[in-house]
Length: 119
Image 1: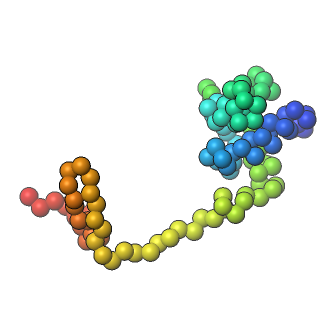
Image 2: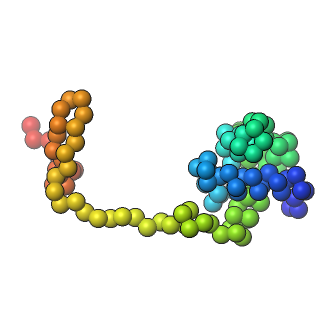
Image 3: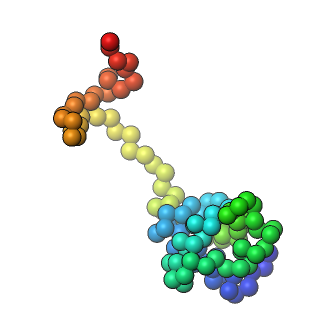
């Protein structure tokens, strides 16, 4: 679908504000709450544009809207390095870790994880 200038501005706003709002751009459907966050960041008002909310072909469920243009443009521009970085630090700690809370101190070690309690 060809977007008007105003529609494109909103899609661009989603792409711009999503990382700071913690929104996943690698999808097509967005909730009303997610779009309201973008609207607040973009315009300072919670209102979602009518071209999204009043178009029945975009409604996938109550409070869920399909906006494939966001996903298409996200893929076209490519995810940023921080969004694409999926490496996990898998270092192993061999020594016990001291955990404390209001109930007192407890020692937790790897050999205790998954062990069944001794009664």
